[in-house]
Image 1: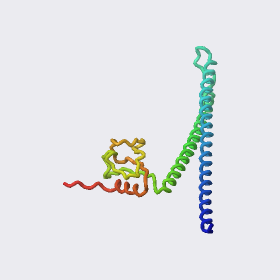
Image 2 (image 1 turned 30 degrees about the horizontal axis):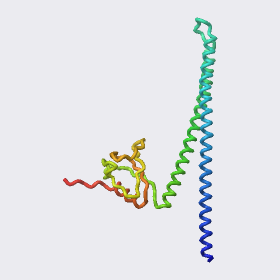
Image 3 (image 1 turned 60 degrees about the horizontal axis):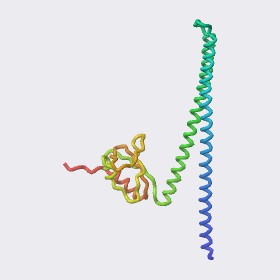
Image 4 (image 1 turned 120 degrees about the vertical axis):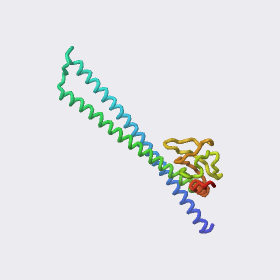
Length: 210
């Protein structure tokens, strides 16, 4: 066995080992994010329970105060200052819990975005290894596809339409769907074919003869 062949085998083993290590590391990071999200969800659930308990306790104490009031009397068993202080303390406690809950919810949102971002990067890398990609194609003013149905938009053989983004909505790619300005088409396919689609989407509509 030649030294050159041994060198190639060693290089292949090194690449394979590196890929396995990166895969294991990515899986560990993903599992860690999921664990963090689960813990934060549990914390959020506990905070919601505390807020509900705070509201319930406040209601019970107000009911107890009202019960202490003498019959047919409009006077409160507490002075106005005492009552305001009592309500203020209870309200501050509930507001503090709500702020903590919002912070936890924001952290959960950030972790989910990190997970989505990582998965999209992984998808892009996988596609790139196969000379493919996933791209967004906005329908701009003057685009030749404006006003056409999806059935009328010719796509290269390797390109597949994943979805249409219309405002805040994901619109299923139905053949009868008429494209509008500001629609965004998400497509996956070979990079060369996607470049062809990009050229067709961005070229100006040819002027009609008078």
